[in-house]
Structure formats: C-alpha cells, structure tokens
Length: 203
Image 1 (spheres, rainbow, N blue to C red):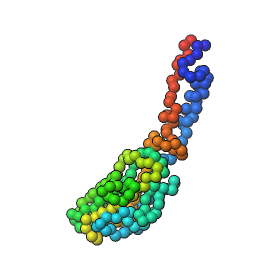
Image 2: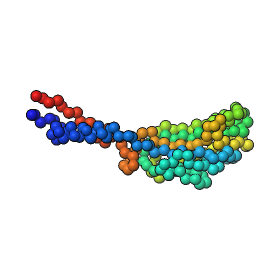
Image 3: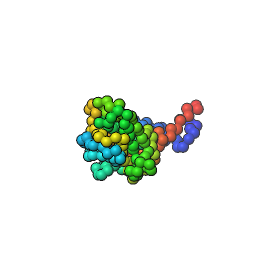
Image 4: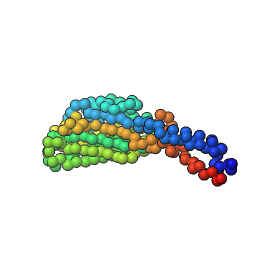
C-alpha cells in the first residue's frame, strides 16, 4: 500500500485523529469570572467615590475579589475580559448627572478609567440606571480593577438593588481563546492541535 502523505503511518495518523476527536468532545472548562455586589445602599458624595459601601463576592471561584477600602478585583490570568459595572443611583433631582466608571490599577478617574457611563436624572423612582461596559479589554495577571460613582448634586444614594436588580461589578472571560497564558485555562483544542486531513487510499 502506498504510504499516505503527512507525518507517520496511516495507523499513526488515525490514532492522532482519534485523540483530536476525544479532545474536542471534552467538556470545556469554566471561564474565569468574578462578580461582586453592594451589600447595602450607601450615600454618595458629589466628589466621587470608589467602590462606596460594603461589597461582597457573589461569584469568585478563583479568589480574585478583595473586600477593602476600596474593594477591588485582581486579575489572575493574562487575557481579554468583558467588564461590566451595573449600578442604580437614587435621590437625584431632575437634570442632575450620575456617572460610573471602571478603572485599572488605580482610582484616579482622569488617569485610570477604562470604561464609563453617564445618565441624566429624570427623578424616576427607579433611579439613574448606569451600565458601565467594555466588551473586550486586554488585562494582565496582577492588574487591579476598581469601580467608581459620581453625582453632580448632594443627597444621592447608591442603591444595593433597584426593582430586585443588584448593583454589581463583573469581570468575565468571553472564551478559552481569550487567554494567552498557560495553566488552568488554555487555548481551545482546535488551536492546540491543528487538524490534518487524511488523504484517501490511492489504490
């Protein structure tokens, strides 16, 4: 029988193909994620506040969240991440501004912000709903993520919930391919083992 093209004999190539199929059929690992929520409503200063109030980890399998003053999330793995800070600011008069930001490696708004949202109050009972969001941000292991709220008028409150929706911050990896570092999470199997097409038997 004519030797098939590629590396190894036909039997070796078929064995490699079986290993690839087994690898592709394995359950995908859970992606890195960390979610923290405000535990109780807190008054806001018009000067701006970083992670005001008391925050608790709601989803933190890798131990990235740190409850401090201010609280923060420390990235444990190089890669691209989706960032979201959802918050509700109540008690503002109509026309006042409520802003929120996500910051990296510091709490100086003008220097460390990587995502921002601003809402003009209509004095609705729901409050000013802000969704500070970035879909794909490159982060390195050791980067610290902070979040901030600002209001343009006194008397505002950062609500722990609004219509049962919590004020919370989320750092999440979108997929295995988003990571460049080896370790617990790796490249998807299709990237690790490029497929080789077996040529038909020329007989």
